[in-house]
Length: 276
Length: 276
Image (cartoon, rainbow over all chains, first blue to last red; front, side, top):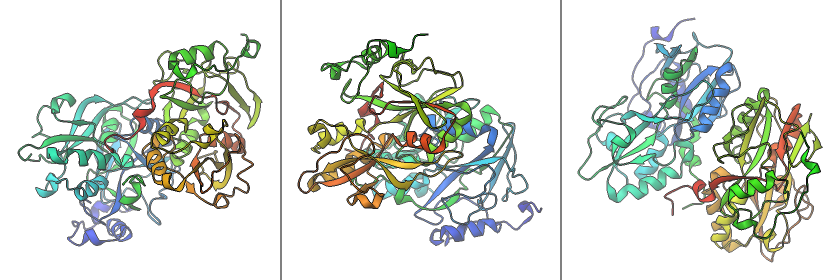
């Protein structure tokens, strides 16, 4: 089987926001790679983490015990590369880029995971904060990292996740600067989307989360705060990758950061109904 | 070990609403039994289902795939009778009454489960609709079954839960009649409590759920609708017991219907923040 590193790899084009999820998955399957922010706008993107069946209970329990960083949208049957969230999708090929982990070490970042796939893998699809940014924007919250053309900054915190079996690790958070007059809206709108990290875990002093320097994120890019902006921290879907690094399961496949799985679900459907 | 069926068993007294959860658990541990509606008011009550570790992944996945009937509040480590939801509690003794299941058949209803406990049991504590009734009442929704001094009526529906491994079964719902002018409030307030079944699964025609006669519930008591009331159906925590009956795991222990586990958590803390 050819490894897709050998295929031509391009970046996502300017029309990608208007693609259907089906089209996006087909392009990624054909070898396209790159960040998925804004792709197939309005459709729900998901974090992927696939672990051997022997580790699936620990992972599912880790997610249950840490629902803010690890909100589960779907879990596949062992060995199945399909999900109810995307008709006709193949989780082995339809993400832009993967990360392959052995004993907690990153060993490859292919655009096709078939060469690594195992029949005993159980795939977890977790909610992604891309889904709540539209709701923040609609409520008048400026999205600073988008304004500044950067990735959202992410930080490993001093806050430990609740352990589950062999899995442990720190909570990872994303940070968005919010003007004080929009803080209520930001909290309300994200709280109404508990399937995609829900409300913030902390507002204000980064030191309370053990973050020493906002200008030096562990993942993503630094973002400039406007005068008066309050840093607001949400639990982040990179948390399971931090758990893989800390807990060293023998094998795992995840998405590459920012290069998510496009589902057929619409962001709106994860917003709690009837609360306007 | 003495089976607690031999102990004196009384009913919950009129002051039970003012008990602390700790006091309630101590009374139940001492042999008190009876429905827990209104006990330790304001504190979260939970459904219990304990299954052998070999079945725990299927149960956790069943809950993940059916979050409205099976909202998980905590999962214990195998063999542990303790939970983070209640300091000093013992899940083997602190519920008023249990049900013991073998191969899907109900074999006993003791007030103490120690004679049946196994070292490989994993306990699931699931949210209970008692937690959202206070929120409905506060929003001016009349609680008809309470007005009428009855248990809430529950129905086995024609809607199948999504299967998980060896577990399958129908969704069970509870029904509360709601005046049309309070329907919005009932939907909003319960939607804001996704950890305890969330918003309704259906409003109106019972036939849409395969319910032939509202006057003949499968569990609980029939309740009289006032003129104009719309029957509103919420997913119900009895659903896992229906899954046990349908799927026949070799062994399970659950609470007896209406006789729940009293946690130290407060109902308020499960309401999504910042959305007033």
